[in-house]
Image 1 (cartoon, rainbow, N blue to C red):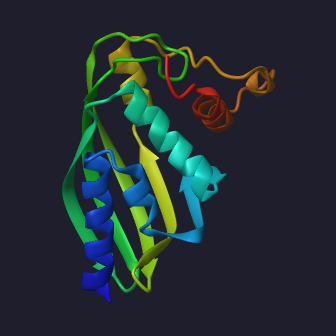
Image 2 (image 1 turned 30 degrees about the vertical axis):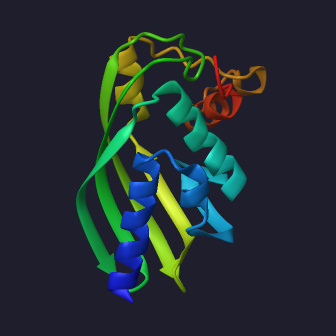
Image 3 (image 1 turned 120 degrees about the vertical axis):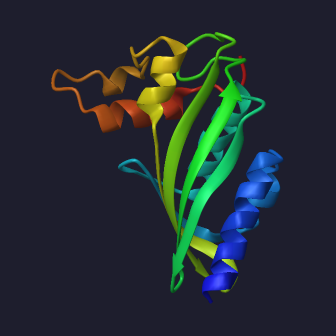
Length: 162
């Protein structure tokens, strides 16, 4: 079971590195639960999020640094690198290269990812792009700022292309 889970998750990263979102989506169950930072997303919203990253950083590539599996759960520590070529969370193209870390946990059953939790260093990305302003949707502009909501809103408002 552990080896199967590792193989599925590593194949997912390989497909992302080829920017094959359709192929990556095949590795998820239809009702997969995804959590990015503290935001719950359905599979389509998660694929939209990935699409926004791949559009903004067309050469985005991950290097899997470590993989640990216990039962159906697979943990991955990875490093991502890419060049900012189109708008990302409201930041116009900078042409800058970014490098950031990410941690994820995926639960695999019957050869498909049924749950995924992900945390990436978005602040590091924004810092490398030279803009920490979070251009979010108006509904995220509350008097008491909730950074998790701001980040989630920024991702959801990101256009697919410039």
